[in-house]
Length: 486
Image (cartoon, rainbow, N blue to C red; front, side, top):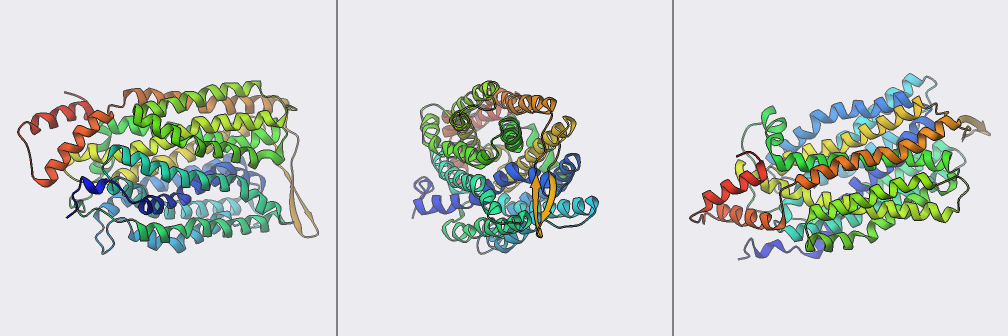
């Protein structure tokens, strides 16, 4: 019989199958982050202020659904386990929801367009909640090994970033292939709806949940979902690292298209520069993985954050008319920093349920996945809302609509010098501010590789019933380190 210790080494097929699931999570967020605000303002002709509200409304809904979905996932009982059934159920709904949110309705009234797009985005948010919360929770269950989780996360981030590259470069190429911009967006939505949905067939087939983790049986309560986790020092550190690093990333994604289009004047280069940035994210994954093994996950995270900050300050040296190669190098340097931040935060997240089990005696991966998924979507909404308000206040002029032979085209307007100056500052300084906040939490995060080894050994003895003399003292010391307080 295979022991728990021996089962920590995952098959390559399991790692690949699991990683393919984040083609949806990584790709969809990048596609939305780069292009959805631009789609709402420049194609749907929705005021930037109202466009920002669409994201905030969906997050109010997520505040309810994400934690509840986590609790539901923890309590699910089926022949396929707690998490995997939702991969199967989500395949068709992923496609439908993605097509709905990008369908460019042609209502004459802006209020009608606003309501439709808001409902479409809420629908998308509901489906990604149903699928990605069980998916994120599954990462903690596949292996308990500290370094094996880094390996699993590295393969996951490879697929996520590969999807992100495709989602940065290809969507606009599909749209440009149609004379009518609206038809282009419909075709793009169909293609990527299928790209995001179909990999879950493989994820479902190649992953297997642990038999030694049983569904949670305690009742659902607001205290369990929204109060208890925030008493844990480690959770607060991870949450701040996760939230603020992705607010920085989402703010960058939301504004970069405006920066390249209107300040640099290189509209045709936008998707290729974004592609170069994301390619570099993939290239640096092995370097950060080995750095985390040699030092710790939080050290690798901090290195990525400092590289990112230095690169954003370099943006003040960029000027219109510069050789386009400089812009590509700049984008690749951003990728070198963001790659470390992203792969390490996804490596750190699966450790949180282990810390929780120390006190709760339960495996509540779904609850933490629900909270973190909500925070991920909140970061996107907050960043896009801030950017939408900033460009509106700065005097952004949306493109003019032109219909020629029945085909709709959008004609960009010249922006004022005042707008361009504010655009430069927001582009450079907004990510820096949030990354600094995430780094402060990084240095306070207490789970080192050595502490995790002690925690893992204690939890395994508890599950097997082989408690040793001195385990109570060890548990109290770990609680002091990981939970905070005396």
